[in-house]
Image: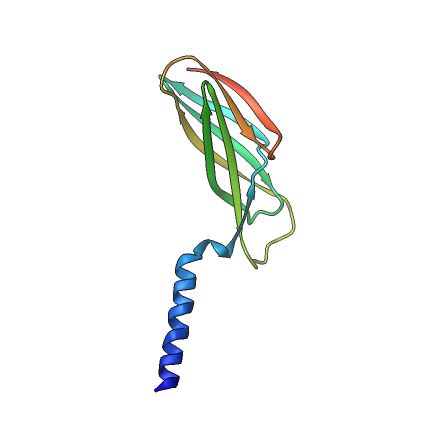
Length: 126
């Protein structure tokens, strides 16, 4: 009986650990943005495409953090790769297309973080 309880306890702990830590199978880092292309500007929405080089082709887009201060929009892109994956050792890249919406018409400066201290800046008139 003690053996069965011990086995059930181990299964419970492992399943809870996997449930709460599902992102631990990925490594995430800030993506370096090589280029920004403004695809369209319609009313108060701009569609932009960002190109990001990666150390291997196994890296993919993860998420965007956005912070707005007045007419400045700060974006930080993140990339992710699965841990312990075998990947060909050549450089790669990915593209991420996103919409930027603004509350009022005017000129907005888009600041895309490449590192914690370096940005690529462009101004879009909506």
